Image (cartoon, rainbow, N blue to C red; front, side, top):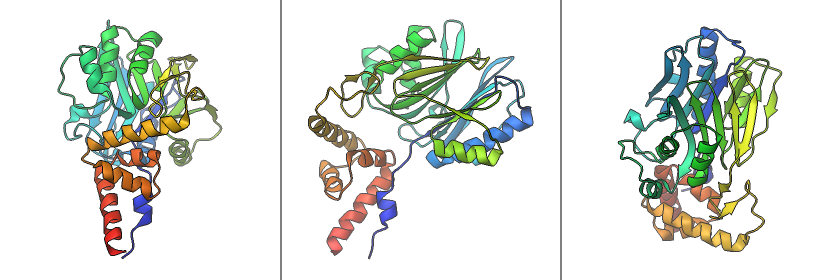
Length: 329
């Protein structure tokens, strides 16, 4: 009996962020719906458990989300919606069957509504709820703590977002849309690709996804917008870009770094700390410490093991296949 190595060794994806900023009103309603349909369907590569979008109309902020893959989603985006912020979900915490657990999430600060979506996994959300005295909620996801931290500041802007980003620990990239059509992209260590066209922007979590979508939509002639770990990028309603920064707390080294500069740390000591953190986190999913050691002995590195934790059922399957192989060999 042979193991399916491609299944055992593959890297598991997280959720996907995607969106359109049509600041020049380039597209009519039919074109916008087609564009978002194609883009979100390509994003299924990183999540099919749920799909959601947020956009503004004359009546305010609207969020539409359902526990279905993007290709089954029926979008009804009006022509007046200049910005569409979307998310496809791979469930890690909080069942997608309860739609309040799906992204984007609604938030409100002083006379301003906003929506937030998150790609990644936070590992200090429970600690933050206690330390920050955040209100109880039925929403079970780690991501929602980011909304609550912004609401606690009772403001939405660079300062409030910076405070939130510097308090949350783990892997993340956030997108935040306010009811005035300002879109913020808050990049931690998770990927983000942004393309600028004549009159509009498109974005998605990876270049590969965005490039495929652009080709299927039939678009050409674009430039890439650079965004780095530790950046807060704001795209205003007229298409201008403003950038400020935050200190990203690296999930591997567990210490404050300036825009992900790791030079101040001992990599060998940090690797041991990271393995300990992975082992502890794996325990939350019922993965025994000896199974983590076994994966390391079979040649998986820490990043691969962490990625596999985003799909615990597949990880258990991988471990079972390795144990079966050991028994038969």
